[in-house]
Image 1: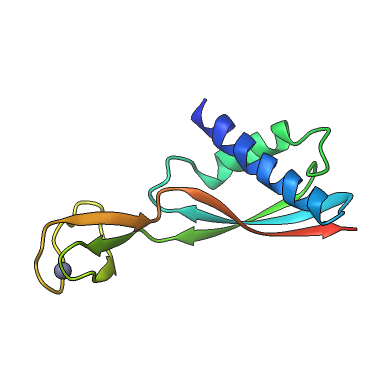
Image 2 (image 1 turned 30 degrees about the vertical axis):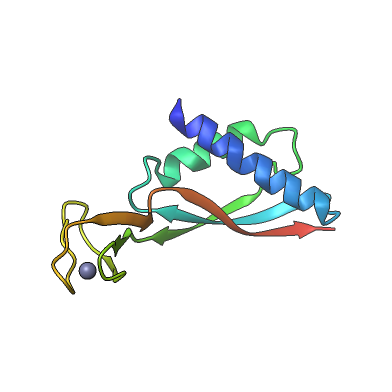
Length: 114
Ligand SMILES: [Zn+2]
């Protein structure tokens, strides 16, 4: 399942960072979840509980922040957010648009017990 591999990567990052800072237990993890990402808060929560068992991240609370999709125009470098099917730049009308953020899940910060 897609969610499992995404969440496993996320846990690896969390455990790695926590260990580097000398933490023994992760209490809280803040996540930026892109609105176009293929996973939901519920599925990430579910996978996290299952996959973090036995790691220092077990039982940590997940806090989600939704990141809107942001696009950039190749012609004028304007950045804008909008619907997925909105494919023209609001500034110059250009149609060469690429997604800058909003399609993945990122670990923003970790709260841990030393
Ligand atoms: Zn433009």
